[in-house]
Length: 134
Image 1 (cartoon, rainbow, N blue to C red):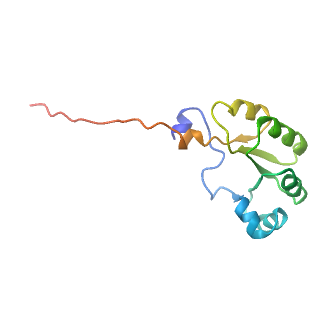
Image 2: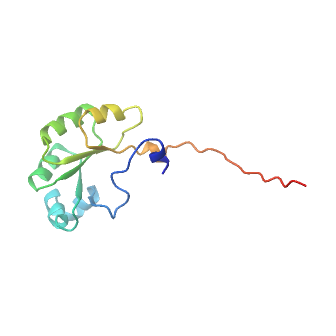
Image 3: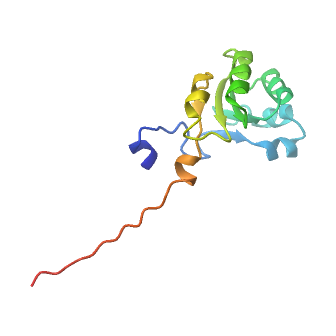
């Protein structure tokens, strides 16, 4: 709710919104292809994390329609998104800060995740004092 109040929107509210295949799932399945094969058709939205150029191409060849591009520089993200050429939607995640989000968005991503919106928020000390009138 706080991020929404600040102008951000969620493309996913929780793990129930989509199948999210992360690096550990890929390792357990043995490959990007195997992980996708087990997930496609289980939910309308299947997103897979890719961390290398080879994983990117394997995911595209295996029919991925939503990619999570992890820990890239803005220049790398632009190159990858140009290579994807609309074959899948792209979310950029990992290392994105409020200072770099514009560069990632300008790279052409459909979604940009900024963990700093939540995990780095500064706490505010609020208190409430009730004073009873006589």
